[in-house]
Length: 314
Image (cartoon, rainbow, N blue to C red; front, side, top):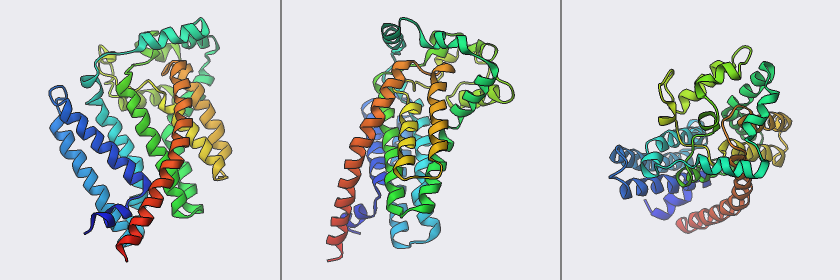
């Protein structure tokens, strides 16, 4: 099959995912002496790149409902897959933590540690609400995607999905550049979070699920040594703002739910001690950058694939 034809099948999300996977392959080859699992990561990522190509080809040529659905929704799983893959890479490649820098910037801006200042407003009801909002992070993408998928042409879904995955990959670059663990480890006692910020019904349970997702075993003696370095920028802020923007861009029925829940989620990042305020500022700026560059990159890729498709059928 002609390379041009294969490229013409790729959606914008396919394109940026393949580029980022190959970037990770290159990083592992360069830093193979530091990353213990480098060979496995290289092999797996290469296989995933091929799988994306095969899935794109199948969806565009066979056009079955199953293949089209898989092609559009695999992006949800690949961002989770790559997030966990970064756990094996970030600290070996860049072993320094920059929390002291983030703390000093927050203190310079506010004169206090925001997570300590906001603790005066702590209440079990508020903690319960904000912990649920914080946990809803990935659910918001499903709500957004399902309504766009059902109401709009597939090109609209592809564009929204592209902005989401593109945003995730940009935030992942920040984890490599300025790794950090967050104020729950540096400014507070991580082991005392449940007692200092108790909820009512499920806050502690949701918190334990989030901890597990960040590779913190329950009752670990020194969790700061094993937690994923994913603080700067705040992907929760960045991607939530993108979701809220897309909700209004597409005039979704869920737009007000996305706005309210997303706003609570962003407040929760500081209240629950996951992020410094500078992380939120960086996330907000990155959200703007993602949308501004993403719209242009998506339009360029769409024009390129149309031209390649036209060339292959003439």
